[in-house]
Length: 407
Image (tube, rainbow, N blue to C red; front, top):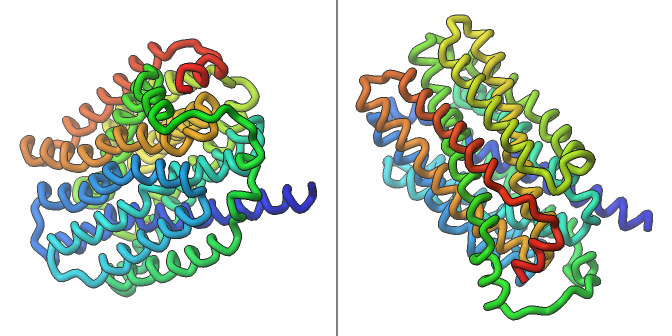
């Protein structure tokens, strides 16, 4: 028993570190695009397309990644995913054109697409259901740590060296982690899922059950608009702070550590709240998170003071995290173990179309309005309101009933 508990801690710790580095790789382009656009002479539309290339591949690979994790287990698929996205990051530092950079970012996105479903499957393979929200919150908090570290690490590497060396360094670290992850994770025969004597259903029944479940599509819609909000902010705020607010790269990087640092705490807190008070009531946390986020994004967009604007951004980030963790916990707790990867992949595949569209959407709005960020932020606030409206329609269905529907 002791060795199993220790192994769980090592597994979730290793997954956490991989996702920290994954988010460094994922968000590096949002800062690097500033010097890259100067070097390559990119317009806002072209910048948006390069950033969106990651999310297009990220969306397209989600479903097949989730399916592979359900079939092959998390060990082989996750370690391979980390290796693929790290290679894409290395290549990003070697490109000589905007097209090459977009292609390299697509490879990075294809690798990272597998991690959300793979991480959820790894948790269901190794943790009891009463521990899943807290385990998932630890893993999800890696995103906040990645954002916080990225703000200072990426800006420092670019400022003191170059954007190319920054990509090389991040990719090399990821390749080492891919090997370590494979060594740490157990074969599927040693996991809890392998010992679970659940009902056997055909592949056709399993997929059909997911597609016919209305909750599948409502969760996907919520996460679609949440991603427009989140990545609309992440993709364009660095340029906003530097070009509109007149911040230096280093100053912007230092300030940008604040929201994700608080977000780290919020992920852990939300995981505890979901296990303790919102079990089978995740929709209420989604409604609260989206409503509060909309208010504070609006306040951020209209704040004159930079410290005050970052304070508002920090609050909105905390509540956006509440939506994200609630979405993934809903899937893990309300769908059968043998369908968690596929369900996560399907939902995330549809939802990541929002991540893909968001940078281009905001870029197009900025181009059409002569760089009017006020209008761009209004679009983002509107999407947060839509998230709240959809979440109110979630059915109040107990876990058992949803499992029966998907089986």
